[in-house]
Length: 399
Image (spheres, rainbow, N blue to C red):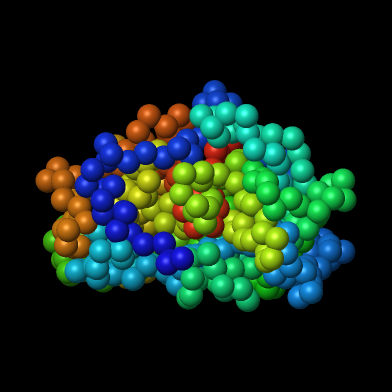
């Protein structure tokens, strides 16, 4: 299977009416809150006393009638988004001239489970009887490369988290059956197994626990497009270090599987001669989407750079800097509309002569650009690359 490509991005960006995202999020807008939730433990002793991660043994890898659960931030999360003024069809690119590298994509993966097939093909959120479940949670940085090839093929890599070999009743998995596959991105927790967090990431994870966050996305963006000295662009930083932490835990239910034969996309079917893959894939590009509830709108960074706190050419940006900014009326720190310079990339988008605008597309509880990022990122969980899941929010956003 080839790595995820952005040819679909360009197609959907130019014809939004023809694109849909079945992973819409069910959320009660009246239930949202901005204060951190009560943490699971104070995090002061994490990871001391917590189970040390041991990957499934080599003897279990590749075994017949097993389902190997992996996790990956795929190529974009691991290697970032380069800039090109003339991208090839299939390249992910910021249409307003930026390049970006992630440094951390920290999440907690949990509630791994396989179940019987759902009773209705029209309702993806419904599944059948439980088959096997793993209660353990994994704290993992999906920016870091793993030891296994990813679902998209090299250079994407993945981390092996668990192997489902038997049902909870102790029976072998049936190679004649397809099982629904589901997982969750959970709020950071003190009893999570540390997969690959080094000392610096462990300190970040302790902070995530204390704040009730489920997701921490950090990195650095650099402007690579045509230099612009005129206001307001001449006043925006040309390099931005960003750190987006928030709580938006969700379940990803009954996921589609791109590795299935055509005609029956859902579920994972064991094989009588080899292991099969169920890779939890985080689409890091969701963080910078310009529209919600569709797949692959154009990526833009200018509205984020416009809100950065500057110290010379370097800007620093947190989600708090995006609070109160209306997605449909994007303003910089001086209160000016952010112009649209999508023309930095040939063919990907047509610049709006008025100003750039992000589209909530009717998404509930999106009050500002901070909510917009959290909402979009919460729909970033997939199976084996592009497989969409039914997404069920577990709690309101916390920041």
